[in-house]
Length: 259
Image (cartoon, rainbow, N blue to C red):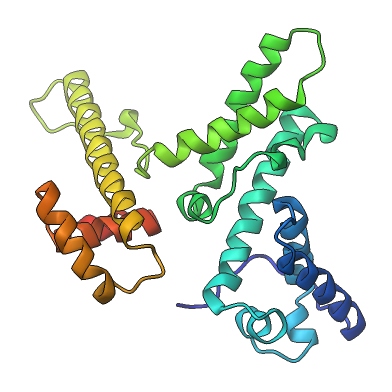
């Protein structure tokens, strides 16, 4: 797995890097730390390229030595920061700066939520904008209620996580075979896309079921026993459940191709 790029900025000097590291270490260590406080500390440290200033070759190596985190957890923190930043900016645009943080009091960004939302931030912010537009219409001339804003964000996150990660198709650009009516062909394509979404939704549901008995940190070889038993009970196979589990973890539909 290669190094992920999260737009780091200029390298901080050693004193600044140490200060940012102390702040990040405190945020990571305190279980009461909110998502926004934690992710702001992550973003500040990463944008300051603190690993370079402190003599480490990568963010992952820095996090292991300075924060006591595993390499996957270190990069998961960057994913968390990206999702939190996208939500914060979307709420600020739609509801105003005073309400940009109110969603953070809701249980929005679990580890699994971050996995589900990775690579889908544009889709997420569009959905948040739609939700908050409804809140504004319902509020009329009254100020926006913070609880309603937080609920709208939580609903958007939940809805997107339940949607299969299928790229949208521009039906206007669909090539129609010779001899077929254009609109009839586009309708056929739309029905096929809907069927594919439902199919992937089923695979994801199976994957989430598999993750309940074999969490993502369990290697495939150690998960095979319990998934074999689960498969026998529900009419599936260990191989299929492993593929669906990988799909639920990564959101990559290739995990269930040819399973």
